Image 1 (cartoon, rainbow, N blue to C red):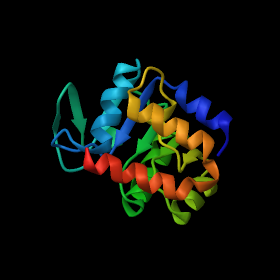
Image 2 (cartoon, helix red, strand yellow; image 1 turned 45 degrees about the vertical axis):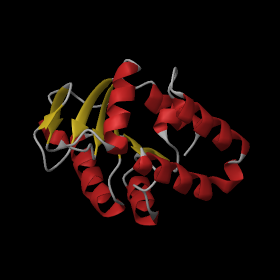
Image 3 (cartoon, rainbow, N blue to C red; image 1 turned 120 degrees about the horizontal axis):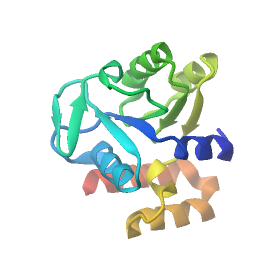
Image 4 (cartoon, rainbow, N blue to C red; image 1 turned 45 degrees about the horizontal axis):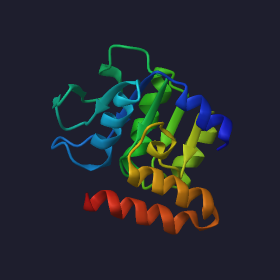
Amino acid sequence: MSSKTIEEILNCRNIAVVGVSRNQKGFGFTAVKLLRNAGYNVYAVNKNSITESGGNLFLKLSEIPVALDAIITTVLPTETINVLNDAVRLGIKKVWLQPGSDSKGVKDFCETNNLQFVSGECIIMYLKNIGFIHRAHKWIHDRFEHRRTAISKLVILSYLLL
């Protein structure tokens, strides 16, 4: 992962978020909302649902009617592997693995399949015009990057409590 990969994904326009909740809660739903507010064309994916507020909720990546530039995963690593297999079949080369969505096996899969990926970073803290909690997360991240694992766990916990 590099800052170049982060910038390349942030410059993508058509992005799918995989693992969006059906009940408009959780990180996936928040990510869709904030990415849309930032001007991205965002497509929500949940393999167990068919509707989503503000647009369609697709069952799988292959149902999305546009060519995707990148995907963001917010599912467990075991499901992330399935999503990445779909991404490879569709020719999607850029992947953002949200904290909790990656593992050594997931990263190995990305490298083996020549996917550009970001791991261990929260995409929201890289967006412009974000709320206080995300700006605070970015500030903490930038100053205490060497303690990334503990901070990522704290951030995941804060999203679960929202």
